[in-house]
Length: 349
Image (tube, rainbow, N blue to C red):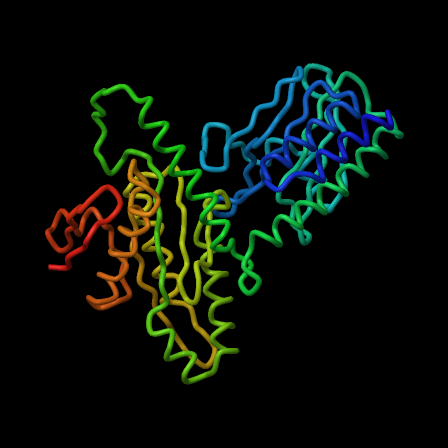
């Protein structure tokens, strides 16, 4: 057992990716506690309701993961469907055991981050986990949490706590590649739904209007406070599974996944309104401009460039607005000329 434990510790401590870290911990637990199945489950909120979605699991030796660039709403389940886990989280418990409908033993283990249960383990077996195995499990989870915190530290902006630019580059490249692979496998069928109803992936660039005036009038320390407040509004305006980044300075980027154009437009407009209606001490109100684009088969550089062009069109035409790149092109307000496969020149009519 000691040799197996050391092997799993080496594997855990060698990970530099959240998905691989999840796989390493569920694999270790499945073997060390003798479980038939172990699942790592995200816990997130949609409005006022707590929801669950599996992100990695192992059963019968086979590991399955849901890539963080793909959202499958069909697997979403309200937390209220599992009252034992709900009570455990409400009481800030470490774990709770119950008997499942088929007589199997189920062990729920919340994963805590700053007093918030952001995930949980769902461990299923034929018998109650022995005290010695629980002790080993606690040790494995301590290492897992430590490395999870280290990964968060390297992936997040130190001021706002949002994901940083380096993490954006990695996740956006993966999302764009995944989108291209999915598109290449699609048969040429006719989709009879309205284009606004077709789900897709979206990228938005958000820029605080006249932010230089804030720094000039109140100083950079207060400017930092404004950035923190805006970051908090960004978090509260989107779902947990959507990704929000501080791109640099007063600019932020959002990766919105598996929603229609109508819903994406509504989400970005809601963000704009939330910020406009928020009272900032001393300053009063601020506004943001937002440019967004569909994540299609173009390269990441071209996609980001289109979102930037939509953003700067909005900033140069009154600010405090949401602009969709494709709509600007359709209206003839913006167009691009492709010079080669890598460079596009943009024209603002």
